[in-house]
Length: 332
Image 1 (cartoon, rainbow, N blue to C red):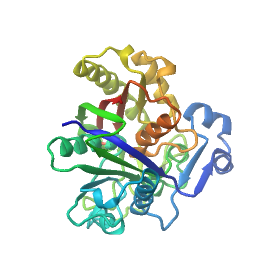
Image 2 (cartoon, rainbow, N blue to C red):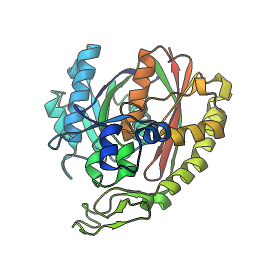
Image 3 (cartoon, rainbow, N blue to C red):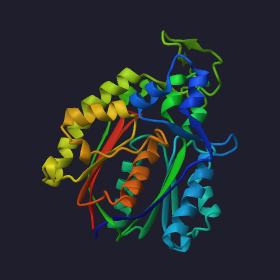
Image 4 (tube, helix red, strand yellow):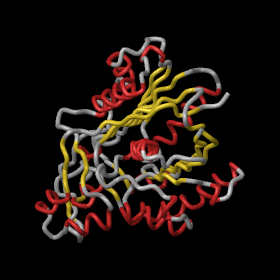
């Protein structure tokens, strides 16, 4: 029994935040600097009353409509998010009802960030191969912008909101290969929102500013950019090599590399360090930003639409946790 990606759709919120608008708030930056270094010109922002569950609902309905999929055929669904609608119940359980998916369907949330899509594919493949499920609906949805301080110019240039829906089945256009997964919780403090959950439920109300004028507060997302950069340098090249060894492939046998779309500077550094030709390295962030767990499925769909998905495609996700994962698809 094999597992395949059968269909992908995604949803972007209506509101768009452009670099021109950001520069008005932070005049020390320039449109050209943000575009050239980060590789992002626009990002979509969830409405104040729009949740990750709402966006996942819209992405799933797009998947059903665009690919003529009957919700009655879904027998397992999972939602990857770090911004759930409630502490409990699982947002996936609510979505089962909203989407009119059968009550015989298994449903769960899992909390991961930029590696979440890869982990979701691994879980979905396990369900298909073990014949626990036939059609797995994998949803990724984040409203990271709700975690950001209004004065955090660094993170506000990077992150955008989005949701993606993927159907994993026993047939489809991309056979899912073997996985490399990893975790190192020593880096947990380097990408974190500290308050709100049960370790520290009450807001601190405190905020200081670093030497670059960026706010640091336990009540908002904190990212230590230099430490995250060092982490990716350390684990991603090794993961790529291990994936190739596991699949008994050489690097030049990979037709396309689709990495988590963190930012252009980081991706270009990794591409050069690993020795990947630019023609084989896919970018899709300019008009959507870093959408966390949805960057890879969004890029996958866009590459599929443009005819760039051929042969073998390596997927790689990495980030908050620290957490990382990769697999190789074979396009059929």
